[in-house]
Image 1 (spheres, rainbow, N blue to C red):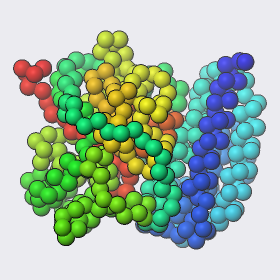
Image 2: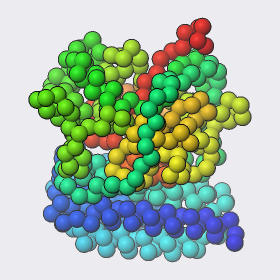
Image 3: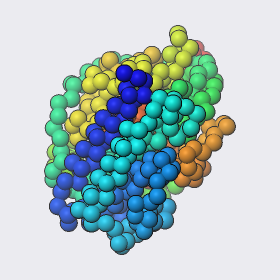
Length: 440
Ligand code: AVJ
Ligand code: FE
């Protein structure tokens, strides 16, 4: 078997798995597919056709030079032409039409893949090299699948809760790990499917710091709320405080408190007690930032997060994942919607990084203290609207992926970003603090 055949098989299997996921999440009544569950989110039927339209743009047209199959629909599925709140008013393809459209695109994409040779996949064309355009559409579909899950959670409709088994938590152990001072290499190395915003890799020198071994749990976050953390402006960024007051936020999204004081949450329409040992999710950057200040800490910078996750000081190189370069297995991390929830704190000792940080990949996206900015020497590829137009002081960086993220759509160097008010995403955080000179 040639190297191209092996890569083509991996791509074909990945495309099929991703499509199975998109179709499973949209295997619901048409009425639920076309309805807008929240002005923050697209109707699910938009995501479905958008995924196929993106695949047509990048594989059929950009890579293979094909003519548009349905030029009149492009603008409907251009995320920049129409903000989310406008999407339900557009003459979108209906559910059946959308499924037919994306299946037609997929058939042609598999034909294009089939015809690719070693020389194409390992040649100089940057859209073809390493199967880049295929990796782009595959990751994109998984990103929208995660967005669809967030929409389904917002809809509050029962169903689609997966009760797959997760490993038990491990109470005890150190709260924080020390990362000694020194330089490390930040950003994507040889990974052919890395996004433009992960490049170029560059050296960053950091002073010594402590970072939480585990993400902040629901129990710890409840202590902040019970201590009046939501009522004390001292802990809050001024913009966060205004947002908190205006929105009347008093707990993570989907949480409620009984008169007796017990915390409950709604998860895909199911009411259940908040599990104290589970990493907290559905908190905004502002809530994470306020918790950290209350705890006498701060959020890690993006560089601190990545060094603690990926750097191997003995080998002097960055790993693709905390545990090494092996693709994520069930003992490493909670990814790919095994269960519709994060795993309890301490569930993945085999997923620990060189510095001893755990659960950095999977479970919950982790807010960092950094704005979404380009690395020095950044150049947009293959299009400015993936990352470049979002750089600046509007979006905060999230790292590590959640329980809903597919293994192909996250790695140590992967950067996600969102507005600091966002709560419907599967985001939590961990804290950090500088090390004193004696500790360092
Ligand atoms: C990287 C998750 C912020 O969903 O807005 C999807 C990914 N870009 N379609 C998003 C994306 C174009 C993006 N995030
Ligand atoms: Fe998209």
